[in-house]
Amino acid sequence: MSVALEVTDLTVGYGGLLANDRVSLEVRAGQVVGLIGPNGAGKSTFVDAVSGFTPYAGSVALGERSLDGLPPHKRRRLGLSRTWQSVELFDDLSVRANVAAAHRTVTPWSFAGDLVRPRRHAASSEVDEIVRAMDLVTVATAMPGGLSLGQRKRLDVARALAGHPSVTLLDEPASGLDPTERRQLGERIRMLAAEGLGLLLIEHDVDMVLATCDWVVVLHFGKVIAAGPPGAIRDDAAVAEAYLGDRFRQAVPG
Image: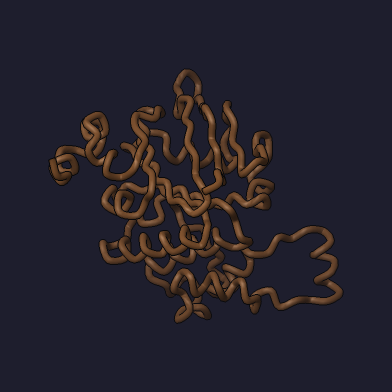
């Protein structure tokens, strides 16, 4: 699998505090990488930096293209998308129109063209595919205010998928969901990876991360303390002490 996202020695500082201290990781095409750690470990700061919302030292590359110095919207156009912990939706647009709005890149030329010859963006087959992929067909014409939390979370992911990104950063997409919804979302994430998308999953539900991800990176006080396949992370003594606890280590056959 080719490297879709490569982050090298990413460092974010606030005053004398390092929220991220030389964090490095890779996300390959078709791979789900988990990023876990205690509250305050620097996970969301990492996503903010990689997506261009927070200044950083180090380097971020999407494929062979460096993203350093680029603002968020240009990173998005190049194929790096993300979700937010607080679900960001257009509450005055239907589910399908929300996805269509995110799918479309507006430029001065496209805006002028639409004034002359409007197009039916919401009817595009690509939007329909995304709606189906996130199991939102039955609520495609509904407004976000009438959705369950699980549906709103899936719609947030659907919006991030618009425009064919090569890598999507998922910032706690299962927060607030019940166990069944979390399992179903994990299955959807695996399906997206099977289509070749690279995904970075930040989530406090460690069971979901270990069941969903191909590779897991553990942050503690802004530093990477472990990285490896789920089984190795579950059985890592340093990770158990810092974050997971004994129940995960005991669950692994000796």
